[in-house]
Length: 111
Image (cartoon, rainbow, N blue to C red; front, side):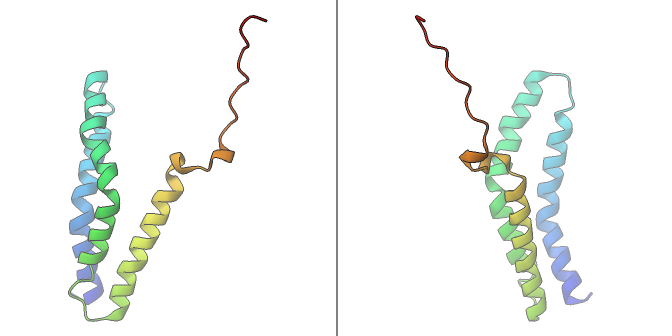
């Protein structure tokens, strides 16, 4: 196996289990029980969101770790950069405050 494919396979061994657990947890969201859906959100999706940057970094380090080619190491860094950028772009909670809708005017009491 060539070095780029070996690095890609090592990255899949890091990203694959994370993605599998995430997808199974999202499938649980299809169940009709609100309690089960809430539990899967709190127990699985919350911690997975917390460790996501570390998983991205671990895959980017472990993938090209044994490679002696600079191209493979650069490819690992590029994948980590693209992945982190995509995550930031899709995270709607990181919008600047001026993009958020203004609060409706408050009703004044006693008028």
